[in-house]
Amino acid sequence: KQLPFLRDANRPPVVFHILPFIGSTVSYGMDPYKFFFAMREKYGDVFTFVLLGRRVTVALGTKGNNMIMGGKLSQVNAEEAYTNLTTPVFGEDVVFDVPNHVLMEQKRFVKFGLTTENFRAYVGMIEEEVEMFLNTDSSFSAYNASDNDVWGSFDAYHSMAQLTILTASRTLQGKEVRSQMKKSFAQMYEDLDGGFTPLNMIAPNIPLPNNLRRNKARKAMTDFYLNILRQRREKPSEETDYDMLAALKDQRYKDGRPVSDKEIAHMMIALLMAGQHTSSATVSWCLLHIAHRQDIQQALYEEQVEHFSNGDGSLRSPTYEELKGLPILDSIIRETLRLHPPLHSLMRKVVSDMPVPYSLGNASEDRTLVIPKGNYVLAAPCISQVDPGIWRKPLEWDPSRWTEAGSLAAQLYRDYTETGEKVDYGFGMISKGTDSPYQPFGSGRHRCIGEQFAYVQLETILAMLVRKLELKIDHVPPHNYTTMIISPQKPRNIEFRRRQVSL
Ligand code: HEM
Image (cartoon, rainbow, N blue to C red; front, side, top):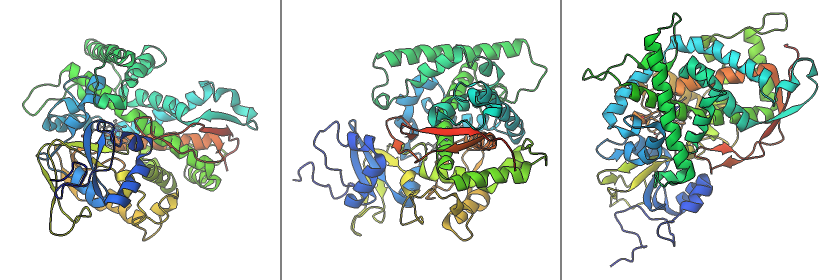
């Protein structure tokens, strides 16, 4: 009989550990990249580790991505992996608190709010928000106008979190949310956000102060949205609302049932939370990199001048279509998401025994591995995004790889935007790409719904900031993994001064 820590020939190898419940929680939690690379070296692409009592099977590489992100519903299930964390924050009856087919319908509803028409309206709104932020935020306002020779500094992540929520509330969330942003809404948001902790993955309802604050804030935020819906019905506005509430309020499920106001409120919370840290981390990593690489910052600025100069030293506003067509701006974001995808681990629960082709792990040819029902599976596209077997100089931040003729990145970019195989998961045709080495927005049926919105937001914020500011920093800080998403470690202060003259 095998000793329990020795390998069962049909199961993926288990990472050696001493404490049964803790397992590899600490080494994974401290630095998942280091952990995945080290375990891959030891065990191959497929291995199981213990994470707070859960048995989690990791499948690395493009085949691993494909197996998990393209996994059949009969085998893998996202709701059971995420609901503990998300349902107390978002509220019931949405996203991972409903069966997959309902989530697919809800994603379809959200698509109605993510239209080109709305994105066109958002560019100008975001531009105004950036302007107002620079004029009023205490880190920036003292450095206005003629003081442009004086360098100030701002905390990249902290400042960009503020700017992100202001721009998201002005656009997707709607004017009522925006108007309360400096008031009641900010506190509700902070309390809700405090409920997003790794411990809640396994025990979401321990009556800790942060969980109690989370519960109260969630109820208050639900009421806040319910109230907006009520007021909009009672007093319809003359102006068009380009926000998500306007898109969701008239949707119906396939069986004819209208989406309830409570479901709408909870979807609004889900969208707010899903977009906030992901986008603010990404924009801060972009700024940190361009602050470090003066040459690329200059190229980015010159791209703005080339396309938007009025000829008198000023720059005009871009349109949505124009912003989308800027290769330097685009490749800076793309490259930043390659090196710093906000989500490093995408999880599913295994609901029926899952055979793994032997070619995936290091198993010998004569057997197939089985990931048993009850395990979790974890895809880590963050690893294939920096795999030395796939990318040239994988750890170098080099936006030019995305425009370099014949490069893998250029090829991927083309496949992704133009020729990618499209599949209808019930919420519109999307690129499948489950075996892509590059998937910062995930892939398959749970693929991110906010990518296009995130791009509008990131592109507009970056373009406006580089027009107004010169940035510098000595080095780009390392990753902090203690936050739920990958954020820049402190210190992460960027020095800046106002840019005075356009070229
Ligand atoms: C799902 C990344 C912004 C809404 C995901 C997933 C990833 C991701 C990797 C897949 C998770 C999984 O398969 O387990 C990102 C990144 C963003 C971003 C990198 C920004 C840079 C947004 C925004 C929104 C949003 C702005 C909303 C407006 C969602 C939702 C899901 C999701 C609702 C769940 C979809 C599902 O499970 O079917 N996102 N996201 N995301 N994202 Fe995003």
